[in-house]
Image (cartoon, rainbow, N blue to C red; front, top):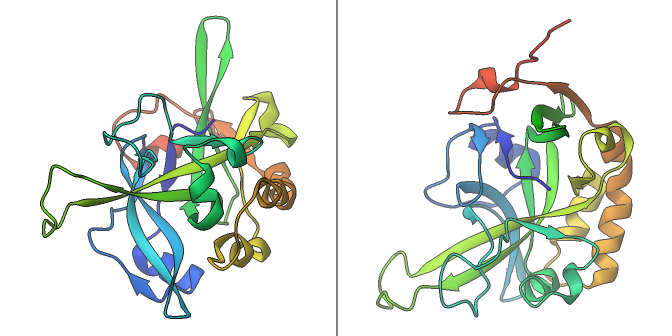
Length: 233
């Protein structure tokens, strides 16, 4: 699973990295402790009049499908299991046509030892980590058509079985896409299927195997100090 992550880069950094065409409003600031329902920055592509536009947008980290009556779903939807995402009604429509890249500097995971949970920071030193994500638009029917907040953009992070060293910490990890799979994952002209999700997992495996980690202190508040090693060499 992925229940906390870090995005330390600026908006300009992300625009340059992902070759973004348009930048949305109200983008969140860098954070070292992003938790479910917080706003996050996502990269997506929209298709209009035959033209594809790559966008950097703010989204709520908790996917709410369009058919939901409430913004917060009954079950947690900030993660989606890659192995079954193509068969779940909550996620299948997004997999088909609303896929996203979710940039991260790294993420946190906890290893359980007895009754104690030990936090670790997982990352690729000197590199951006990019999660495979999905997004959805939810209409707040309690607001009038001309209200600026009537539509809510929400998102989820795909997870997979952990491989490499991080499997020592937890049995799940985000799907960490390599650069050469970004365009294929985003392409709005491609109808996403379970097969595409499986391809994403396979493409992400070499990245997941390179992930590094170190123990950190309690993950509280929001500070760059959160990712500092608890016991530096």
